[in-house]
Length: 166
Image: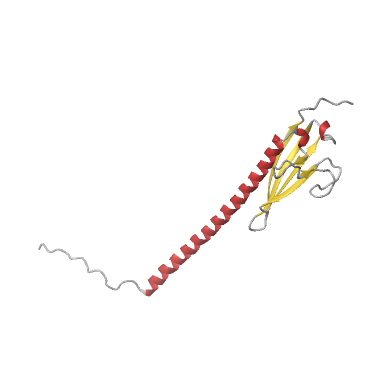
């Protein structure tokens, strides 16, 4: 009685149409999820690119203000041709919101990023000030239309300040 039990022959029926449709439905749902994740990742990448560009613009403007001679903080040569392109005034016109507030403002738009920088000396005359607060702000809109802002600031001392002469 060495009879071996033979396994049952595999079914030759295959998959039914219902099983195939269920498998295709599950696969379609997974593919739609993957495609939406790619779109979400693309939005994140483009948002990060714009944020990086805005930060680079703000840092570049801040470095130029840091490297400039103190007495030239209110004059900017934006294109590097040796001629002043911006003379900042406390006039309440253009980028400057309020006349006489002691804050000098200039604005420039680069690749849909609005770059605004302010110089606020602690004395009405820059040459007589001990220091100036400098702020650089970069603003842009993301794909959903939300306003984004990066703000950098520093305090800059007047190297020629000799004290109050009054």
